[in-house]
Length: 312
Figure (tube, rainbow, N blue to C red):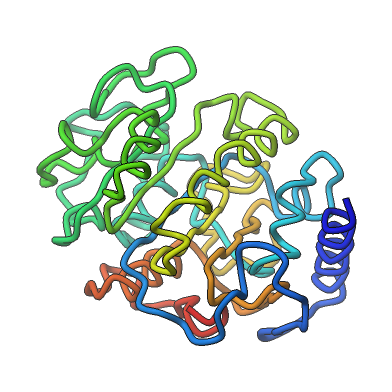
């Protein structure tokens, strides 16, 4: 109970710091009571995991009592306090973040369309850069499913939109396979995790999404890959609440719908650290590529990575 109270208090202080306009990076002297800050020197990270949530701005999440687990993580790990989505609605963010395509090139996806000849791209993506990868999609009926089904939304599953990508039918899998891969010690180098429409907060509440993370993230953090110090986890939101279709949010600091919470979880990330550097989904792509020794795609080279700010 004491740990929860301390973490919640730390998260509240982080939120207050953001309102006050904290700039740069801050490494606070918070004891490593959680999954972060257990080592001082960044190891070689051979696994990167992204978990994407939906449709809530930074101010909706950080400091919100309906998200106690997320705010606890913010106090125990790293929090980017000036992190931006790319555009609106969902799909341009998923495609842009995994390909580095400029916002001006993402307009074919502005209708949140299902994969088709008109709603796809031949661009390269992080899924095809030579490393092992999987996309773990909650409630997806079958591998690389290109149609919506129940609480599964294909627009939140980027691999089917890349026409030059091979292996979608093998590596784009239902979420249940993540537990098997963790148990077997076969987590790929890059993992893209999408909760279903309820659990990612799109159709469900913030509390439901927080509950899903509190039940599912520990399975990753307790795995041999994370415990051995080889795995970094990033939790972000596709876009903030509101906004207008096609809006360029990558560097937009005046629109609340362009700013989302992003948590950095790794053994070497200082507990309670924050950074007010302007990051965005291109930064996330560049960070993953840098950690895995991959070349930067497109706009990933145009924005700073998060490695230095969070001691990765």
